[in-house]
Structure formats: C-alpha cells, structure tokens
Length: 332
Image 1: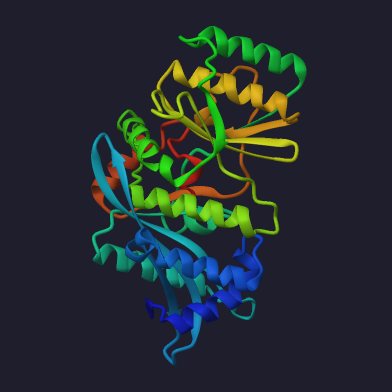
Image 2 (image 1 turned 30 degrees about the horizontal axis):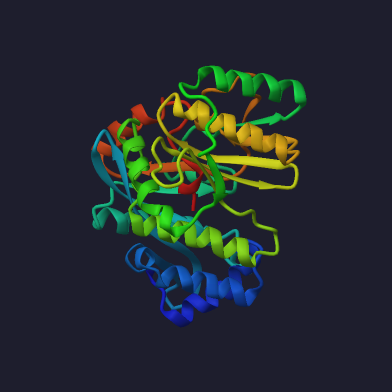
C-alpha cells in the first residue's frame, strides 16, 4: 500500500536514508535541510513524502514526489518528479522499490499527471522496465590549456555583437536576482521544444537549496555564481556557473545569440584567472564552442515515463532533440 508519510515517519526515513542521500551534511543538518524544503512556499505545495507499506503496516520503501509543469510550445503538462527512492538494506532484493513505483504510477494516473520524471543514479534499465525513457545526457569536458583557451576566447569575441563590456558581472546569485532570471528563463523556454517551467517560488526554493549546501555541506559544495551583462537591468540574459578546485562547471546559459557568445567570453576569462584546469557542463550550453570533448554521463540519467497518449506523442519528438532541453538546475 502506498500513502503519504506522517511527520514521525519522515523522520524515521531520514535517519535510514541519510548515508545514501545526504549531500555532505551531518545527520542533524540533513534532517533540518529536508524539513526546510518542506516549509518553503514551493515545497509546501509541491513536495511530498510517500511510503510503500506491507499489509501489517511495516514501511518497506520510500520516496519523494515533486509536482512540476513541463512546457512544450506554450502548452503545459503536469509532471510528477520522483526522487530519493530508498529501500533499507535489509529489505532489498524483494522488489519493494519497483512495487512502490508501480503504485506511484497508478496514483499519478488517478491525479491526472501526464508523466513521471526522475534522475536515475543507478543502471537506467531498472526504470526502463517500468516504461521510463532516457533523455539525451551528453556532457562535455575540456582541458583548459593555454592554446585552446586563447583560441576559444578570440572565437567568442569575434562572434559577439558587442565588445567586452566592463558592466559584465560575475558574482554570487542573490534572491533579488530571481525576477529577472525568471523572466529570461520564460523567454528561453518559449523558444525551446520542451522544458520545465520555473515560477519565482520555485527559483527561491532551488536557490535556497544551493545556498544551504554551500553553507553547510562537508563536501565543499561550490557557491552558485551568475554571469550577466548588466547588474542593474539583466539586459541580455545570464549564465549560472560554479567552480571548485580544478573544475569550472557551466550549469546553464539562458540568453539569445550572440549574447551567449559574450557570456562564454566572460566565463573563459574567469577560467583563466582562476587557473581552472577542466571546463565541464551539459552539451546544451556548449553550442558556440569548438574543440570540446563530448561523452555520455554515467550518473544521474534524466528519464521520463509518459502516462497520457498526448504526452507519449510529445515525447517521441522530444527524445529526438539533441542535446536535451534540460538544464542542470532542474535536476532534483
């Protein structure tokens, strides 16, 4: 039987799945982090914990469910995101997780969701037998040696319709940035074949999660930074990046061409200043760059299970789009 978890049951699940799902937080912080998410405006409306129980009432498996809207050419689809799937070590090998996901699919059909969405951290074939299908998950990784960097910077400068501008900013993301980021993301989404919608409440929830982990994770969680062309007006769009050690990771670039080229010019210069050795990111953000090495990522596979005929028809065209129209901040 599948049902919502009570507060005391959520605490029990958090104690059990801490070692699997904690992003570098100690047990107390991990519990606080999860309840903080449930207390946010977006979380209160869109985040739920579920458990699969035996007939005698024993908790056998658990997961989170998120409520999202996907958009395709201005049409919205209700999507349930499934996360933190967990079965205690002593209960594994008995298909409790699969049974829970089958029950979740039935529940979501009853509640008129049109698809289930998840990011698989295990072999995706586990979910494929339930009807989930893989999005493209191509990423790039390039060594930032001096020859390539010099060429890439000159290439971006040549493609940009504006010279380098001192008004470009690279700084930590602030909650006050959300209205403009939301505006640019909506414009970006309207030009894409599909993607997840983001309300201002969703932005606050996601940025709050990133800030919490930056402040408290023992994994040295990198600070989320924004690159934009005008601090006061966000005239052309933005890029989100994070850097840690030898890596600089580009999470998303939401801007029209040639603004993308100007943003990349700033990112590459930043990599040079910080002596970054490796540049990484989704293929989706890399269109202007040449000389990149692409590969299929072997973790966190984005997958979707269509539940309605219309979504099934949409999905056939979505999955032909390469690279996928998914941004890193949309992973949960």
